[in-house]
Length: 437
Image 1 (cartoon, helix red, strand yellow):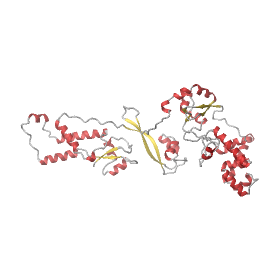
Image 2 (cartoon, one colour):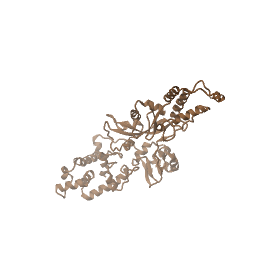
Image 3 (tube, rainbow, N blue to C red):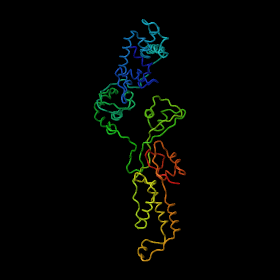
Image 4 (cartoon, helix red, strand yellow):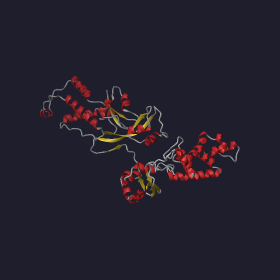
């Protein structure tokens, strides 16, 4: 029974404790040892955090170590540093009939204090009243019960229907790493306050159907980069990957709070195993931002006259091959800019005194020809009035400032105006219209 105080010095009775070396749970099992004892560890479940499953595994492991040494002090030392280190210390000390104190100086420094700390924990737990130490009231539910779940269910579904704080359910079930019980794979245990177990059994159908579409398991996962909140809205929510440079004194929790994401997600996105950060390092943050919706191009306005339509067609045919987008579709902001400027150029280039209808009535009297100088001047004015663009395909990692620097005389504001962009969010593969200066 004294062995139950071992988690006091292992993890301070915290089932979510993780050491620098990766040992996890109440009993601080390393991954190979835990799997060798039959504990399940995957992306959804980590039974090293399960107080019941890990305690059974720890009892089995300690019994194996005792059968190996026939001495509890050596078994506890081997639990801390591994049987290999204890066996090496025994060989160096001369072999059999040795206990922990005989090989004390031959053990790793941490293990030298491990067995004395275990003895101290037992002393405090048994003689606390002689040192004016009083037990504190437990913050967790004292009386609990468990039920086997054979369907896939999210802890938030249980919390919503049973009207329980999800944090309380997480505290009682720390083994579920993503708040998901994968009961569709095999039955799993769910621990709840004693009276709530009956409520779960009675309400199981309601729990499983609550927000089913949100929590159901998807067989096909597609990357989502755009979320249409409202089809009639002028804005959409897009997934944006940001780069955050860690400043001195910043922590993962502060950065997560700033961007509205979870600390665990930041660690996952950046492959971090520890919570410590180095100032100056760069973190990848996935966030969602609202940006202007890209609409279909509006039809070009019809002027109803033969001269205007023919001049517009001629203007489009003279546009260089480099200026034409590969996709064959035009952004809405581009349509507005092109239509207005081309109409203005057509009006300025056409003779003001002549009307198309009057031309048709007086066909027998041809209009006087323009001089070559005047035609050349009109063509120059037309070319000056007509905006010229180059299309740029955004590459991965490029920003508006980098793109603007590639084109002489072009500013970020010019690119934003030409493409109808209000912010700085751009995506790889997106085509941008670059004004020629």
